[in-house]
Length: 213
Image 1 (cartoon, helix red, strand yellow):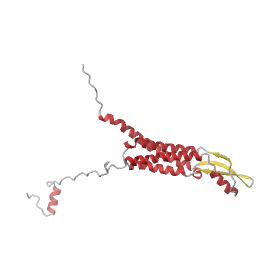
Image 2 (cartoon, helix red, strand yellow):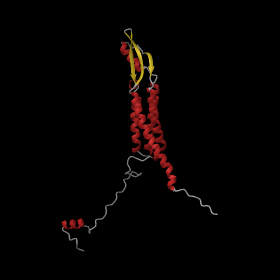
Image 3 (cartoon, one colour):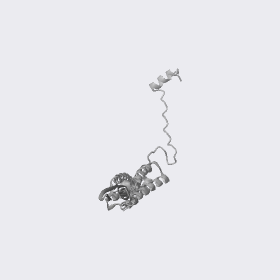
Image 4 (cartoon, one colour):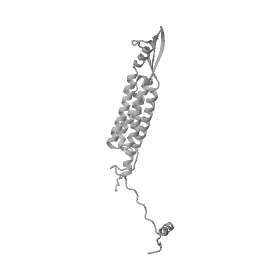
């Protein structure tokens, strides 16, 4: 009895990388856009609160994320721009933009975690409220929003890592140009059929005899 060895079809072998490329592309787009939105939202929320002693009483103070640090919001915008730019470049350019995307996420995480215990913004408010530069905030407390911003940075970092790992399989924004950068040759127009009625009329308009040899 003869045994026939099945030969894998070339399309089957290529299906795996193509499928993983599509999945990583979708995941990167979702995580990058969602991470930027979360980071921007978190910076507009209250990060810390406390009181300042003013005229023998307690004056409530609050600080939003943008008051504590402007780094997460700025890097979220940079990361969002890098996420779009990934599809406009190729090869080394795509690697560089993907690295910028990952670094933006890492920077958001570092800035958010640092700001989670920062009291400088509230100390400045306490000094203004008390009219003394040496005044500091009392009963300092923090919310969970800095950690939400850090989670948004983690999503952007994930998008950058996916772009570094699978970016070479993703499509570019425009397919008009080949990999060499040269434009694709355009299709040549079909030759006019002299027997077609419109061509006969055009020949008559030009003063030509369409029935001539």
